[in-house]
Image (tube, one colour):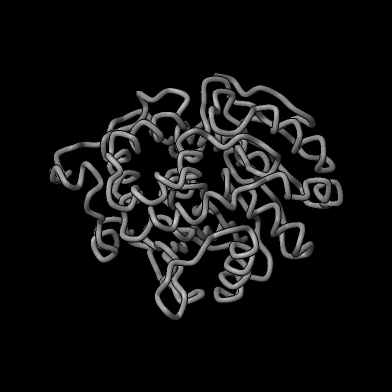
Length: 329
């Protein structure tokens, strides 16, 4: 099995300069420009709820569906997907209003509010559109909530479940998200939101911000500055109230589950890892010292060792013990 290189900075030579207006967030990146820059060789589009949803479908075998988190994109799974597609069919998608997909819009063109009921309808429709009746689900952050909620609602459709720094339990929103609870920010952000704020937020989700290369950082900025995305986020954030999420239902899940967590997660409390592991019967849990909110992007080689063991794929090196353990740094 080839090793995964997670420490080599990408070249900045291919990055076009951004204008002052773009850096200040006064202008937005057009959707067709995002499509041109960030689709991949395996990219496809499917019409879901009126939107052209960007997804990548690669490999063959048992199906794995990967769902990213808030303000991220399917690219966060790139290096893990490259390994898993050797033995599995791996499907990744850009959730609305993020990535290449962007916001959902009503028949009148108004941007839809993305709350949990809307995400339920969206992911159900996506699975139906691709004809997927059973799969392993992997979800990070908001994507983790969507993944375990899908498993609860479709008991026979989820073969395995991997939750990576998953949302679901009551918590205070990270400061970079909570800003959008301010009416002033919601009104002003579509017209002015400096990229320095977005870059600071991205660095905050890494345990070691020095691991972020310039190309990855630019991708996050341009997706956040994508046409319509900031308006959609402003409508979405006030609905992110995890107090109303029923996490007791996790006790009824009968799905092999792996809970992975970065010990330096600054966005979701690390104590939530134990909450998931204690509620889901038989769940296994791994805590990664030094890693942040998106460990599969920050250190894919460390995450892959545990995924291989959990999925039973070739090259599994590290057994996943019952209960909670700490992965080697």
